[in-house]
Image (cartoon, rainbow, N blue to C red):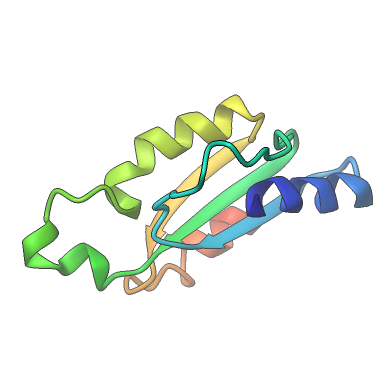
Length: 105
C-alpha cells in the first residue's frame, strides 16, 4: 500500500521526474485478500536503503531480506514502470555517492 500511495501522490503533483526513497527490509507480509491499487511508477526513480544490521545476522544469512531480494524487487518496480531502481546498505556511506547519483537523474 505504501508504494501505491507514493505513486498516487507523486503522479498527482507532476508528470516530470519523481523520486521514491524507501527505508525498509523489503519483507512483504500482507493479506492477499486486501485489495491494493496498482502503483504506476512511470517517471519514478526508486532508491531502496537497506538496514545494515539485518544483513549481518549470522543465523539468517540466506534470509530474504532487502539486499538478498533486490533482483525480485528491481523486476517488480520496473514492471510497474520505474525508470531506475537502486539498492544500497545504510551503513555503506550511501549518502556520499549513491544518493548524489540517484538525485542527479
